[in-house]
Image (cartoon, rainbow, N blue to C red; front, top):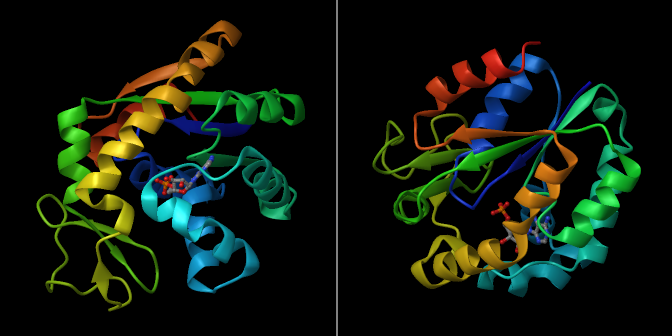
Length: 210
Ligand code: AMP
């Protein structure tokens, strides 16, 4: 079963690798951050509830997040596997998830803080389709314009310096303990995430043959 959890700090490249793995393994890429942002954009009740907390770089409550994930995983496309990107992020989320889905492969993205800070502060995202670019390492063909849909590129509020540092603290305090949580369970694979996504994809395929 291809049930993957991508674990690692913000800016580790989880989302970029997940896009490629989803396409090759034919499983959905489920990013809780993307789902929250879509709700904010569409001004749903959920979006209004989580907007300020996400801008500040804090975490949405476990209750709201777990409900959202349960609901998303109940959809048909997740029946034969999935990639969870950005979930679980706390021990209670991981405990809840183990209870509903014990069979999971955890991929731990290892990366130095300096690289994370650089990657996040130079990241740009398409307002329309959510595609990610980087003004240094993956610039769009036309500055400020998405290659895929010609949407406008912008910098996420939580990719600004103050929020980045806060998100890294939150990661260290609340999410990093999950590495030991899963190590004790046994099924966790470390990946050196400092390398390019295409190279990382080669390593991923070797470790997790289809
Ligand atoms: P991401 O796109 O994964 O960096 O997530 C962006 C923001 O969404 C995070 O900084 C949190 O505010 C919120 N978020 C995403 N996933 C979770 C989660 N599993 N638990 C709590 N908050 C989350």
